Length: 127
Image 1 (cartoon, rainbow, N blue to C red):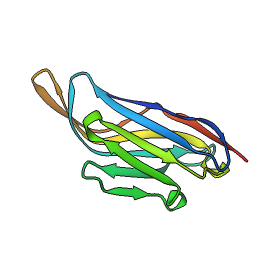
Image 2: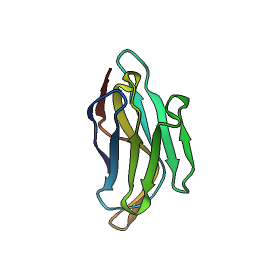
Image 3: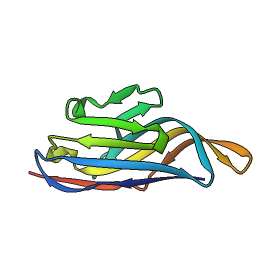
Image 4: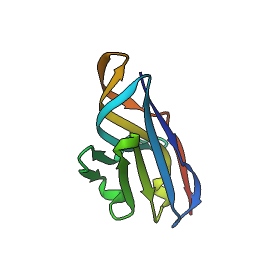
């Protein structure tokens, strides 16, 4: 099994900054993760992509966060970060981490999971 553990959410005033972290762990050891990213869901809205990054360093951002958010990744630690600057009230949402294309060892067996989600962390921006 693979688990994603998020941290770093909280409340901040508009214009402020927060940094989210998400670490992937497995019952055995993780061999590789293709894509890691962040999604968010505001009350009454559908979940939307915020930013993703591949193991090769390719990044993708939602237009609404370009220039304000930066996604980064530590492949050795299987951890993805989201630095959020110049936060706006419309950034308020539950932010969830996703890992896709996970290959891991459990004993002598190598398994692959297509996708795994974290439990979500609340980000609240007050104006």
